[in-house]
Amino acid sequence: MESTTVSTGPIPLPAPLDPTAQISMDAAFAGHLGMELVAATNEPDPCITITPLITLHVEELLCKYNLLDNWMHILVGIRNGFDVGV
Image 1 (tube, helix red, strand yellow):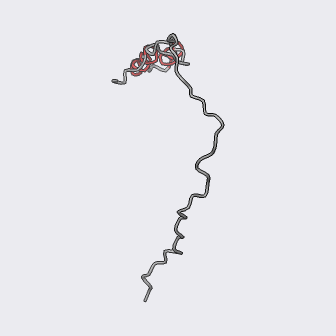
Image 2 (cartoon, helix red, strand yellow):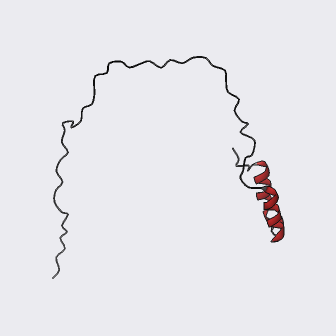
Image 3 (cartoon, helix red, strand yellow):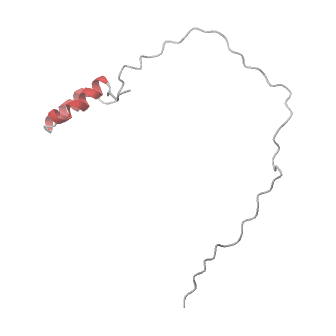
């Protein structure tokens, strides 16, 4: 008859409770980084679509392979940005 017991291996040793690394140190000086008022930077408009795809080439390829009608929404998304419902 076969044995139905399972060996789980050796019992793991408990983790040491004493810290093994220094948790604080002396510092000669810890400077305080204060904030100051500065003029806001002129950031680019996040609504502008920036893409490495050249939409003219994408449109030409879609026309070449007769896919423009089925993939027009992709071309519009590349040109104007994709509406992700946010």
